[in-house]
Length: 193
Image (cartoon, rainbow, N blue to C red; front, top):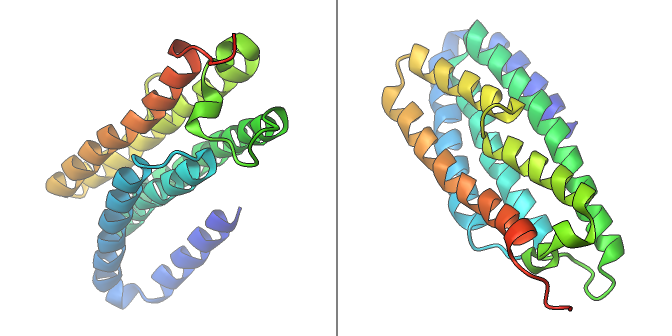
């Protein structure tokens, strides 16, 4: 919810400062590049699930800023779709992590290792979390894919081919850590027999 309110505030400021909109476009574009790079590469090293999702959120804000930087009807509508999809899947993913907090009494913060063999312990929770992770990664045919596709199409329609290609490449990098979590959930055995 705070991200949506900040987004609406940015849009209002953007409309008011329409005569200097090119400057704001470049500021948003620069922040988008910086956010996507930080979000994609720092998240790869995270072991704690809360930090991993927080840095993943930085990555997703980069996509939102990319859509804002074009300031067309298509890009703004794709930003709002992206925000809606990200908000729903984010709440779901954070809900699963809070459930893991209750189940895992050994450590106060769940790690990637806490997901090991989750499918054997709680198959429904494993399915829900995997579904959310696939959507956050942008795997088709889930809504996250269409949300990212709208942002990428807005970039390409605005003539930012290099920027769109760069964001797609960082999206591939960010998909790696989501797939790593799903691998831990389904394909790694628990240490407790």
